Image (cartoon, rainbow, N blue to C red; front, side, top):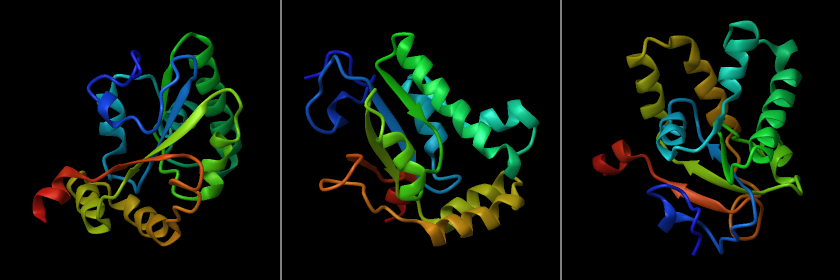
Amino acid sequence: NCPRAWPKQANRWPGDCDVNTKRLILTVGLPYSGKSTYAIKTGMPIVSPDAIRLALHGRRFEPLAEPFVWASAKLMVRSLFLAGHDFVVVDACNNTPKRRNQWVSSKEWDTVAEVFYTDYEVCKDRALKNADEEIIDVIERMFDEWDLEGIGPDGEPPVVHHVDLAVARSL
């Protein structure tokens, strides 16, 4: 087993763990699905494109800045691994193969996906409870675009499934 595995999560690590391999954990899920809460709870360094956007231009989204946001995120991941971290979390929706593939292609680290299967209506309710009406259209668009192609046993990256506890309790 991996002596430098996730705090409180070691029993959930997919596959064999090589302590000499850097691991990038991609969160995959709709806005308000629990990705950021999970990322914080891991205790690992987090790279958040949302935080990069706010630091860069102070807005949730600015199309012209997106190439710089994602280049910055990749640079941050690389620098965290070079600084000696074994695990890094990219806290983003990563809901399409195109978005995930930019991380998988790296020879510098292994990539796994932490998929959040939080019900679409639960995500919208959470947004409304946080007075975040403007994200509803984004949740709907991302739900329509949701594509897990390339994730799982036959694809890259390997997947750790996360079922939202609020949803699980309601079943």
